[in-house]
Length: 112
Length: 109
Image (tube, rainbow over all chains, first blue to last red; front, side, top):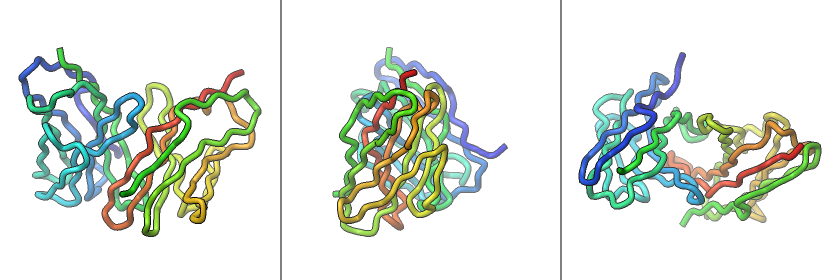
């Protein structure tokens, strides 16, 4: 069953901690993306990667970091520098923009 | 800058009534446009894309380059259409989609 798996579903972080959100896909897609979804804000692009070992900043990259060591995996680290990390995070991939994106089920991060 | 505007945050219609979710975009190039839907407790999924000119679940959308719009329409709304709808703009080649802020559609019985 092909798709994108995000884990964990819920994540709680203490102030000052870094946390890493996992995103794995078995669709053989080259491009992967991280979006942040906030109520009334839509989806905002954090980082994206079009090929292994390469990634670019999106519109709201500050306080986040990523890596793309394998085609299947695109983990997102939310660092302590992110001032307002509580949000719903969505990972997506595509075989080509014209086909649209396939999304994961998301991770809800809460700072406690 | 590329931008997608969905002017209605909330839209409420009665079952059987026509529904139109508005989407306007700003882009000087040749756009690729999509509608995504997020049902309650489900993941975001592609509803339709303008290049395929298909009808999914009774929904259609026509790209109007003159008005820079890509409104989503359905002649007879169903209760199961209640969801969050996002319009998205592709900028061609860069593979990055820009999303609107979404419209929450509620279809009342």
